[in-house]
Image (cartoon, rainbow, N blue to C red; front, side, top):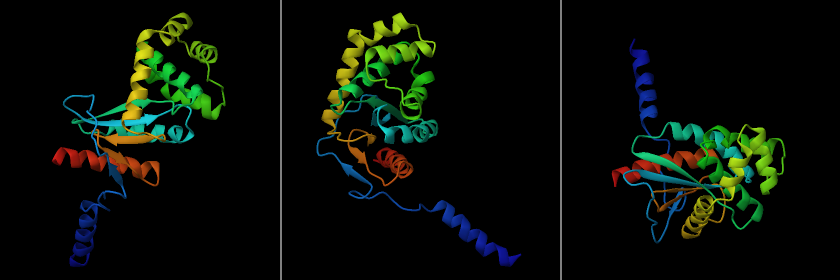
Length: 203
């Protein structure tokens, strides 16, 4: 009996101890001027991304699961941006158009698949509208939303946020308006982001 107690205790210690702790400059950077979070009462995690970005497509299933495991005090806010690419700008409008129609959750992953698996050129209004219609979205309502002042304002706000945070790549994750996540892999970046949530909560 005694021969098993030490190994079990040792394994328990390994399970309780963190594999590593986040380090400024290695795992994250800190903005000189923090940006105000947009979600009152929550620790806000922003994901700047584009449907046109292949790295964002790889991140998507990971961050979807990660979001489901977030504590109650945290929230993920996805921010579609163009990084100056006109084609990606059309995808930003498509994102907010689908959101305004209540279709975003159903079709977000499907857009990634259409672009990166099926190689569909969803980079102008007509192609995007036709694809949305093929997915059961009312064509007239989607086109109206795509061109609406509300979608234009939300798209402009997303680009302003990206400039405020000095975003120069996608995906990029920022925690509570000040911690910019680094990481060698998408999974590592999400682990760091989760630890930064705990850091903010402790602060």
